[in-house]
Amino acid sequence: MRVLGTTVLVFEWLILALGIPVAVNTAGVSAPAAWGVFGVATVLIALAVGTITKPTGVVLGWMVQIVIVLSGIVVPLLALLGILFAGLFYAAIRLSARVDRVKATDSETPAGSARSPVGDTEPVGGGADLA
Image (cartoon, rainbow, N blue to C red; front, side, top):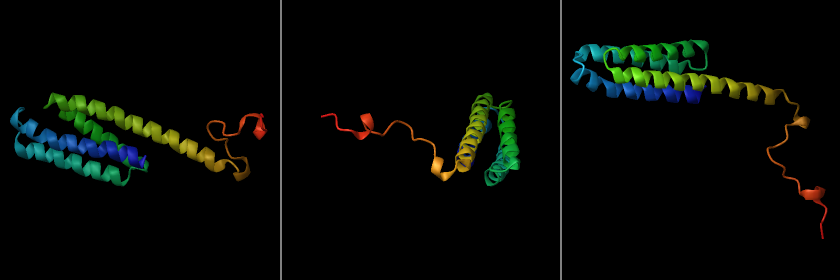
């Protein structure tokens, strides 16, 4: 979860940073308001990244998604990007949960009965010469 979730949140932070000039110049948002929303999102993202492996971090990550989607009220493109990143965040959580389950299964497998590797690496015929 740490890598996938953090990556999504950092890229969202960059999208928000790039959205400030758009909001100020095209949507008529005052610079202090735009920076205020960016500041709140930055704090949420920093807290979410710091606690991403705990349930609190995931909740904070979803709060970031909500802030970005709601900022689409002012800059419509941010709503589209917010929905896209919310989907990526959801995928990061789901894939991380799947990886955690596989790791837990592997750690429960006794050392002598390890899973067979992918693909067959044995010679055909059990190593007997075919000549």
